[in-house]
Amino acid sequence: MIIIYVYIWIMQTINKTLCINIRFFMKKLPENIFNFNIANKKIHVINI
Image 1: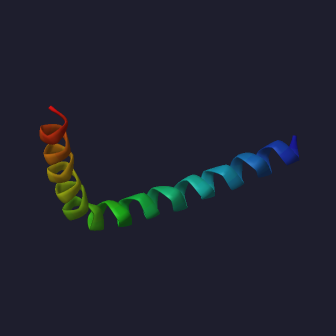
Image 2: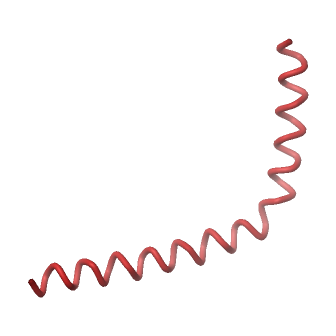
């Protein structure tokens, strides 16, 4: 049982760090996502 509790605790800490990293990247990504969407629209127009 102790091993299971430790495993759950480790997974929770990893999830917290992942959430923090995702939030940090999401602050930097909006410009890239905006440019990526424009590029996708151009590609779709070319494909049509």
